[in-house]
Image (cartoon, rainbow over all chains, first blue to last red; front, top):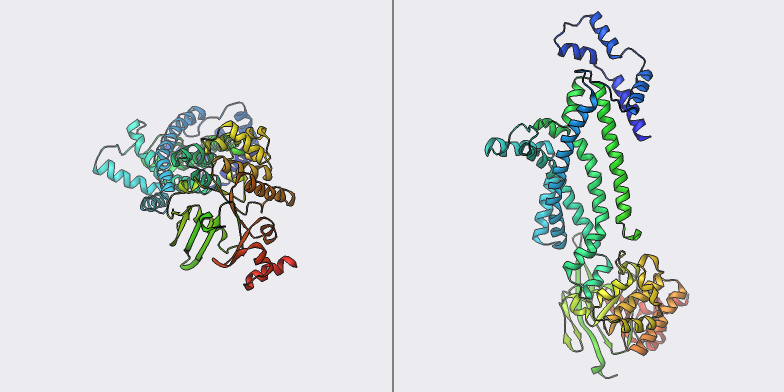
Length: 294
Length: 246
């Protein structure tokens, strides 16, 4: 239902938005656009039919697994989206992994050392990381690692080396957010009476942290991380364009410029599905990890 | 009782906190003592410093000044684990005092490694709980059962002193009476000493040998229960008793 409403809304917005895909296509091919040529191209692309007929046709095709062909180059949309999605997933998962590697130890350390110098330093860096927009981080990283030290390529060509800077640009703000949330969640648990009681019964602090506190916090932490994955997939559009990473974000930006509606609709549907599926997985995981459900 | 019977003592305890730039004196020169096998009641309204005092006694917090003694030996500033060897806290929300993921058996035995099955059975019997409850988690037990289990856990750890922080406030009247009867019974049979913190002066008067009245972090009156209730010296104690009568 969500996907149906979403696809209808986006289809409607594109219908009302200024810009003519037929004209864009002809111009990009270097054709001298006349009224007759333009009308014929519109006819060929099916743009002259009523909105509802076009939407119904698109929907019925999608239900049969056919996402249509691109207005830009007449190639099928599905393989384009799959290729872009593969690269975007690679980027998103790498950045998520980096963010977790950074944030978990820092969040735990900061919570355990609450009020100490370490805690203040971690909180300051997580605040800065969280506050910086990722496009600014990417420009700074690019300047440092591509121009100054010259260890990574400016244009990410899809290789592992090219993946590192875009992944780091996405990971740094996310790590800042995660660190603060992990710290806060652990502090809540560390203040619980059962933890206070266990300490007074000589149970080792590290044992309590691993066996009780972390396990009981995991449900909330995974929920936060899970919800971030969806945002990450959509949020990588800017970074993909800065580093020319051949992901779905770059594909959709190019498609918006070209008014390539079938690709845009395919993107919206895929991203919508990812959001819905991730939310569902998060809900199920939370239920499984909730101590009260054990 | 002679002074040698004193097992726990606090002298001139002071503690202040800074909240939004304002200094709050949570404990003002508070002194107290607890004799072996005695039940000391601490009463006062919310924010009077009752729970803060218990947190200091159990070493969860360190006083700004003042000293704490167990059987004449000072333990001020030691760790909660150190104090845990001779005293255990019983919290208001008994369910929250257990890890929600743990079965009772693991929660009790893990915390009391030396507690064998025989001893555990005896203690469970003493607190009026069935052994089958050891297979349950806190969430599937009633408040009264959880509170009894937390008392059992404290007894398993061989602590001779129980610090009950509003331990009956979250329970219904019937369960409250059962827990109070249990504490009396434990004092008689197991010889445990108890500090019983409550805002309910009626309940404290039923259970305790001595009463300490606290207001704004200060001990305003202290004495035998009969004397404090029958002949209160401080205005605040009179006020509490008047409210009780009303």
